[in-house]
Image (cartoon, rainbow, N blue to C red; front, side, top):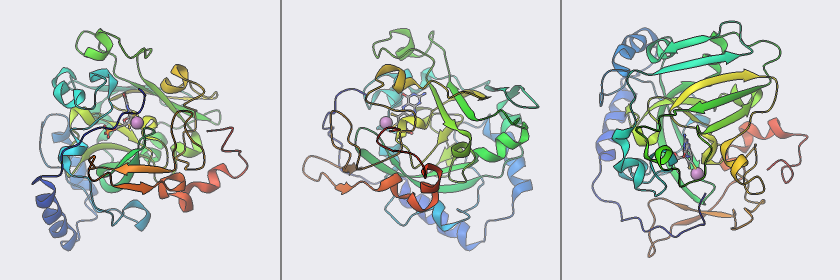
Length: 323
Ligand SMILES: Nc1nc2c(c(=O)[nH]1)N[C@H]1C(S)=C(S)[C@@H](COP(=O)(O)O)O[C@H]1N2
Ligand SMILES: [Mo]
């Protein structure tokens, strides 16, 4: 990450989330569940429709949602880190058209019984979509609350039959330097493609999802269309965007920010207010939308507030060493 800057984010204006909230209430009242078959159908549209609504069910458990105020759509889709599309927060939305999402395929490799290269449609078809309202805490000390639409990574991995040697999952983002400005003129110093990884128990945790949408619609390109990881108890950089490869393996994968600055960004990257970044405190965060006049600074929670769900994954680990 670049050195911490105080961004100036305009105050919230009238946004689609009011409409979204209304629609959600209606869907919930209708008991919008048990639609797996229909959802499979709906996927015919996912790959082709640019902006269509998605069919999904509400979060299936209390831990998968929050009553905190949602970050307005304009901020979720206009204030982004996606270095393939540029380094400033406004670059990814401005350059979103550079990301070519059709056709899209995902390679599943390594320690699996059924490896292969699959079209996006084949990847998505069996999965019912669910809303997950998660906090997203960037290592740069800002945060949002985002209503994702997705499905558990666990369910996808199971289809490809991981072997006993599958101890880690490695992910790779799109590589398209002829279109993506950040890869064409590499000013970030990132060694492309962007790569990330999880331990297998983290990957199959019920909170870990692959997202295909947010605010009830297909993911905007700048948020990592057509398929991105969301791991809500870890710093945002773990939630790799625009995934083209998933590899199960025995060894711990290399990860982009750790390669770039190993003393600043670890493999685990669990949100932890007690372990500061070498260049800034992690004790609090700016909940967006925020501004200079209304900084909206709130305390950062251990594991981003998901302690009850995930602390046991790290029982015997020193989180200062494994940061
Ligand atoms: N491929 C890729 N994935 C990425 C990034 C990136 O630059 N490239 N940035 C990460 C960071 S630092 C954050 S905070 C989140 C931001 O996700 P959002 O823009 O959807 O809020 O994406 C993460 N995933
Ligand atoms: Mo981030």
